[in-house]
Length: 117
Image (cartoon, rainbow, N blue to C red; front, top):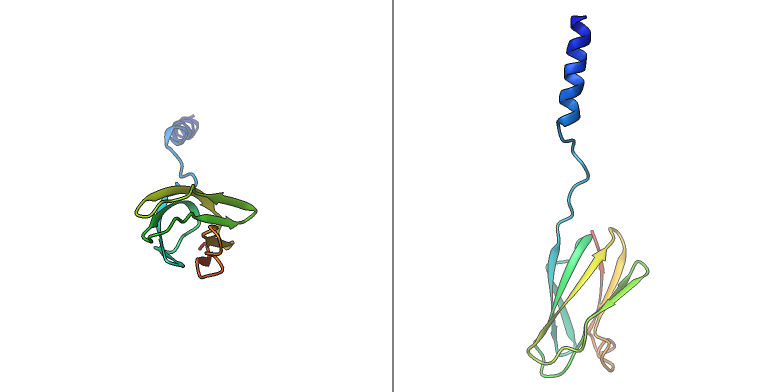
């Protein structure tokens, strides 16, 4: 009888102790600095929720596009000296293209590829 009571008490304690679930996803902020025909990403994007803060430091208009894993995200046009935010969800091991789609900016160097780790 005592063994049964101990087993029931132990089961009751286990029922109220929270168990470890999946790790919470941490949102990463990545600055995408857009200069004349160059995009610099800092830090390198990781898998999970990523908020790109696109900063236009050039004297001409830009935008920011991200494509990979079957999805595409983009900002509005960003005026010189302004910024825009873009929230994405990147998958581990997937190759993503980051570029400016204004005129021929991507062909002139505003085109990056990253693999989310």
